[in-house]
Image 1 (cartoon, rainbow, N blue to C red):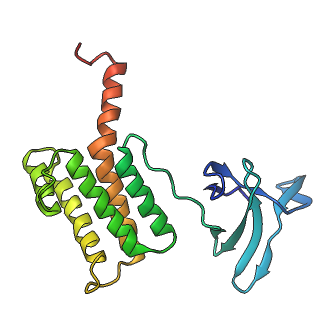
Image 2: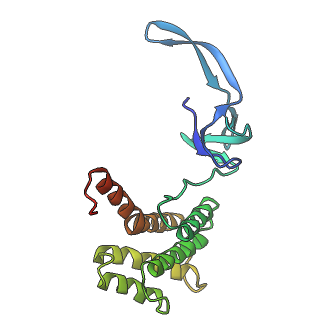
Image 3: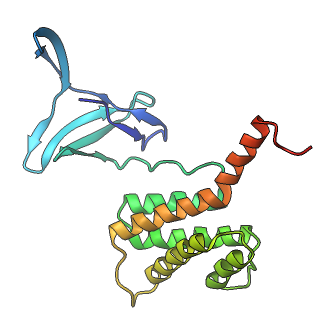
Length: 208
């Protein structure tokens, strides 16, 4: 079985877990006989369980395999947000990811909305306007396209509803979609321009 890769909840590094308990034996591949080693799993009615160790910090996590899906406890950290996105926005997105990882879907949507408003202000939208008008302002000034404007309004709608008790709960898939849209918005608004700049510099296309 292939190692499971996670962002370690103990040392915050991306690692391939090392199986603690291994079973050794002889296996067959075609006509060849070879020595094999595979993780030992303890079977229960709720799934198959084993232990993995982080090769960096040597702390362990519990691994559950059920229907070919793996879960890790404590919950592994989410994938880090692109460092080319401004720090204050990156922190909001990272918090939204943590909320999603512990099934706090309303909180996830709310943090996405907060990140979006931070981005609008950094892109010079009037800080005194409501978020709806800030998004429209960026589109009118052609800082974002009309398509990206619709993405932003979708994030705003779900984020607004998440913070008001009279609206329905935010479902898991909805929270994941809003978080994905938020990251895409930030990639286009901030990270993409940095990538283009580096390409221009590499090919000597930057004006002196």
